[in-house]
Length: 285
Image (cartoon, rainbow, N blue to C red; front, side, top):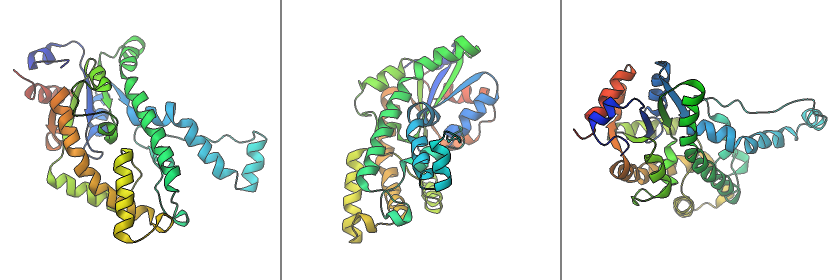
């Protein structure tokens, strides 16, 4: 590990970490808290994906919809209007909307093949954004003087690496520059995440094999073909599966490259010093 012992971590003049775990357990909240303290640079993987690597896909999709409206079509063709997404660290709706959900087009669903194309675009973008981490560590210090760095990953990081391979190229490279930290939820957190997702289902990235199996199983269980599937119903059903699918993958990542802390411990952090102390408690003495 980058910091093999608590002493190394506490005495390090540069503290570089990467937060990972299911969405909704406090990664971005913690990263925002560290950034607000003034000494940490916050690098958001989802923001980088939505701006640098998928921004053109997102904007083109907006334009495609706008071209269906005669007034907007005329304005676009004459370069009279400008259409762009307004992604922020806390509002990733343009990226989520572009990814979409498969199913009935009358309910906003995508054809499954089109959905899988967008999933593959996200996979490539996520790998590229994660690979940019060392560049942003150097950039944060050279441009802005930040010596402390927090990489705020998306929940799907465990889908784009091989967590059981201790020599996975991407994770091995990342671990040379950051300390990976798993924010682990309890069974109560899992139940709450499912309830929250059930109220407002959103698109997510999953491994292709996992998705194809889920799509086939859902059709078999419901006796519905693709165009008749309710997109929200499918992603709700898939999300519960995803939690069970991802938990052991996160655990393997922490075992091979980093440390783990609980979501309850994260909620008790009020300032950067609390975070530094918590990580020290979870490193070898």
